[in-house]
Image (tube, rainbow, N blue to C red; front, top):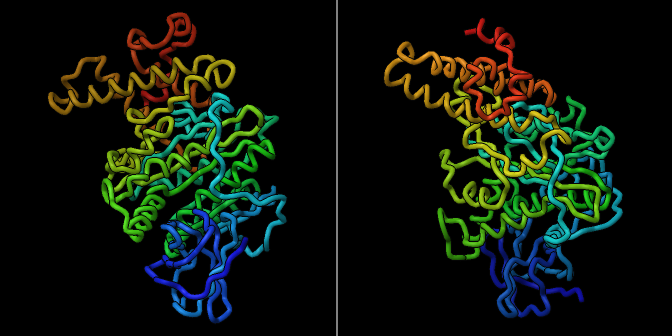
Length: 468
């Protein structure tokens, strides 16, 4: 039963406190009516007996302790859902901000979602092609996976996110029409939000994208709602409309900082770096909403992007994210300063589900062999460079010099590509073979000898040698 209460017990930042409230529910949506006849929304975030704490979405400015009327709706926050979500732009609370009016809702759904029974999950298979060699070949994104990007301030993660949105496709051409993207930006500045909108419109992909934008000057409660609204939309499109949905969440560090600020305002005991002790379970609630279900043809794949404070990968946000997700793509400041884009640091990056979504049925039969060999050779490049820094490059052996040459070309030709260059998986793997042919045949010990005899040809690397 819906209830009305007049007056407030306490106002603390974005929180209001009411006493003598009965039958209230956690996360229940409330409507707050001001004395000037305007209305705001909030949700119950804490219940202590008959005392409830409500977080107001639009802030508590101009609220009156005596005249404010609070209406309890008896239901959680819900957003309208239909296929009209695609091509539209919403704020962090799921309200349209593109001037095109409300969407025609087929249904309404709780933004907190429902837990997925592990038994009902299918193992993720099939890859999503991003057109970016360093990702497609070495840290392959699998449909239904959650694969975060670990970045740092000043690195082009926003540019990379836009490129992934523009180029992402699924391998099955028949199903590519059922592929869409849900893009959620949290705590971004106005110019960054405009950059996302403009790039999506210019490239013509906005019609298959649903955008949720929370600006840095918006209330922190809206920032906490943003990924939940986006994932609710993604689950609807995937599991009820049988679409393959790629969800990009940026920046999860802004989300975690909003959680920290919110926790502090409630007076909770802080944990590491001031984050609440429940940060792990809170992030898990979001990340675990990715997957493939047995009773649906659709899928939800996640790419959370987070900036590591001071580049510290042991910070609680990347640390906990790494525990929950299936790998990570790490961006490197050193590579970016050398002019490499995208500056993907190969050695600390991995995709744990990659091995089950590549190969003859999915990408190409030699994919695993080429990826393993490129990774192993690039690791030896670091050893050769370390040795060269001690004794000088001139004193290196012929093999070590070939690794130095391989490393330069690997970074300048394989890792580096323009932000509008869309490489097929065949182009990427062929480029990998060309680079491996810079090295002596006996150094390629991760590739089956039969395949090596068939493909290895030193003449394939001539165009690289002329550039050094």
